[in-house]
Image (cartoon, rainbow over all chains, first blue to last red; front, side, top):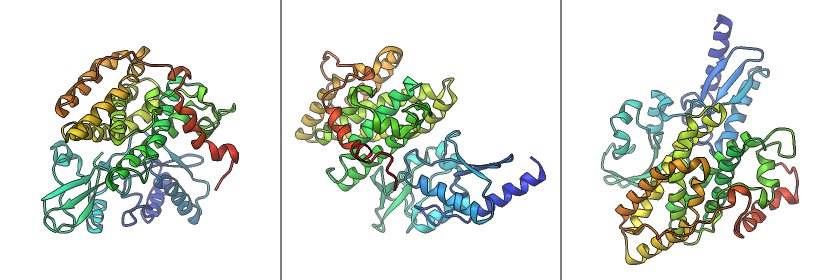
Length: 163
Length: 233
């Protein structure tokens, strides 16, 4: 990759790092891992990938990426959606996980925790830190989350599904 | 319509996704309502990608919307199981369990196949379907191993759906039967449910011969785009 292309890539990732996810506004599209790469070329291409195939936020995310590029004078840059490799929660950044927890969403387990089977264990309550929690429903308010509750502080909370 | 496999899988997902959407606001509990509609949403997403792959870009079947909204029932290629009415909650769970347990290995094979575009959709969808299958299996066990009433209804739901399962293993899918049988038997054993008695299977969906239920489903699903062609909002 040329130095100029590297600059453009850094500029675009910088721009999109300030664009919040429409459903979970504490985390950016870059932290969520759905902005995959910037491909040099004429025109340059920004590759994004959906979290879930049917996620209704997909259209809003594409529009938000487009708007951010346009606002920075990058009208010629093309936004492309690609499915492969399939998005995984392993791509959510460490900072992103902390933001989810602070927002009240139990973050998905990391790849290492997942390999150790930790994603099958009870979630840690994002409110009080208790490990005494129980699943209420495998499906929650958005495709990417399940509904849990804490048996200690009695608060319900969302758990990011580990995929 | 260039790709028959993409069309079959897209139609399965579209039609079953629509059936699940009919539960919205009607499920036994709010959590189940969320679950069924979330599964429906995943299937609708999968349908969009598979039907886009099946569309040819030029003819009257130019894109996924044209395929979903402008075909008549004899042009749909979904399996008969997908279009069956919801019945009670147990029958819906039976349908989902039998279908997802089939869809999961189908997508796994496709994800390793030569067609890169379909492999990408299959790999993506497979992650979602694994979740559907485990959700449905969990409910088969809860209902089967629950009260006498829930057990009776779960057994009836399975009986109803059973006649449509042979169709899933027609032609090149025959090789998946042993794996599906083992999985289904394992869950039924945990649920304390007997395997339904063998029945003569009903097929035809892959060739456009559908049950009377599909036309009613399409009448609702296609009403708006047929009444207002190319409407946008």
